[in-house]
Length: 278
Image 1 (cartoon, helix red, strand yellow):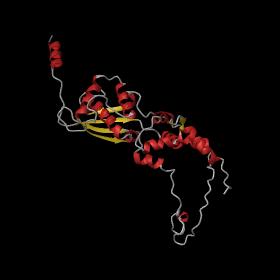
Image 2 (tube, helix red, strand yellow):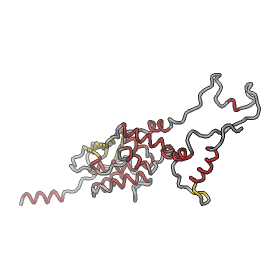
Image 3 (cartoon, rainbow, N blue to C red):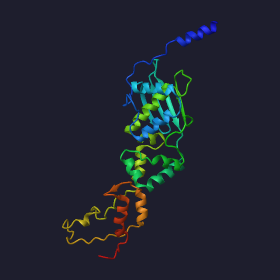
Image 4 (tube, rainbow, N blue to C red):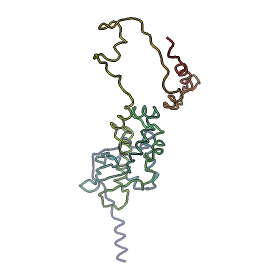
């Protein structure tokens, strides 16, 4: 009887409330927690773990600013969350970093399709990037909770606790504005990946006389003889289908005609041009 009475009193004990905090409140205070497809995919992933009330409490923490900081490192999120105790709780969320072989495979895919580079340079995540990562041997989004390894210094034995959940929701909110954070979490920062994407763009070699490489095209300057310019368009080294394949299917129509077909038709005269014709 005494045991049952103690359990009853414990069940009636009021739940602890977090101390007020002025941390990183999510930009979505009501409704959906994400706007763009990649952050929505991350939020859907969290909901799909089937963790119930802990994720709901985590959303409330995320919206009320209980998460004080989130630092994104290769393979690990490091955060502080204000709970009911004066000292904030320390939270870490780890994911497996892709191997060097996987990154090399992904970079080869990115280099083969111009639209990947164009989307990333524009600050967006191409929808095909998820399948490209899978082809390279790793998951862009963790499939199950077992794919993550999370810790929190709070006394709650549940994992994830509401503090861990809050950090993940804040991270999803930040992905809306900065999708590069997702790749940085996997081990490739923005600068490093941009350097690779831009590697194929080379500047013309400098002239031995110190003049810029385009100077012969400007007539009448510094002794350069003016006169008519004769330009020839040489066929590209790659067949048309290979060049257009790098661009990928655009899925756009103009006046009822596929833009891909228009590009192929416009490219054909260049491919068949005779470089010896004046």
